[in-house]
Length: 60
Image (tube, rainbow, N blue to C red):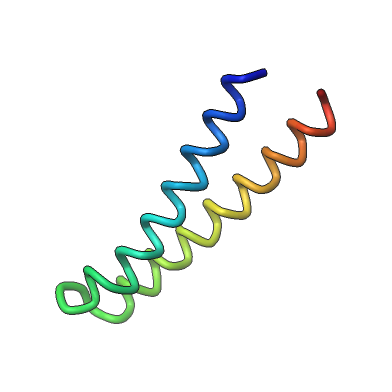
């Protein structure tokens, strides 16, 4: 069960990192539509991470 929590933590960290990069680091490099795509991807990643965490608690 410990492995799933490590996966959840890494998945959440990745979502936050993608969101932060698209909001700060890449705003001068990418076009607005590309930044919007990255932010959407980060949001979906966070939703999936939350669902996996809920399922991990439920099936414990």
